[in-house]
Image: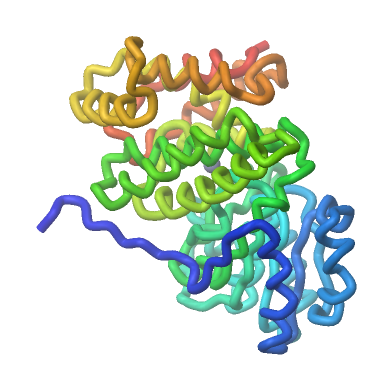
Length: 381
Ligand SMILES: [Zn+2]
């Protein structure tokens, strides 16, 4: 038997293409059910809402606005309000909106409070039940529209960022409309995009991966390369870029679900438990010092996979692949999101490093290496 067997879960139905959000209303109308909408406030001010709002209104019971990563208490509140009244969920927004809706759909079918089912801190396994979810991302990065997990964050009480996870939590339908990315601020396009890159890159390098996951990740990385320099352009090159990034993000979700992630997400997950920083920006900031660490690696599998990746993505580069990748990403970014920014205290760094791990990487990084990455990514004062 092969060493790494891969299980891949995906949407039952995936709609892809510019303007595909216009299929939402007919999809709902074809099968009328009490439906709750989760969305971000920005969607209510978007051209898509101006076009669809009235028709969509006829198909939904009500809506909940999500403005940040949902906490267990918020999810419990929504479940309390809607239990017994909702049979289907639609989510239109960024990763926080999609994850909130995914957690809500799952918890509507579970009897206990959210915290009881959370990885890391819960004491009860989730069951294979959830409400059907139609997920429509308005950012390209998290891949939440095709992953099995909903990330839940509590920075106040239990200080944890953890997932509810089960294959049935994969959204039944994903509608991927690249035009929904139009008009997003450059910083959002770039920091979400670098999250997609990190998912694909860490899945590619994962020791749980095999041909199947690496080929999906490589497809995604090649699309990312096409998209990254042009995400904010207001012309056909920009349209092509946003289309490529939307698909790269979906492939990132597929890849991370089956092959897992690495030390960047191992650190980001803990940092996210205590700091309200944008997840994609956190991953992007940690990515650059991690590439410096990778450039020095003596691990034969890491060396082999990085050489393969360098050949595929940057074939004419003389520099070590990790350094060539870092230079290319920084040179072609539409905004230098890794400059300036917030600070961490030495206590924050110690708190994070004490809890972080290297996930599915080949190397289990020690505390000094993780500290070095954090200190390179944020000013520590
Ligand atoms: Zn991520």
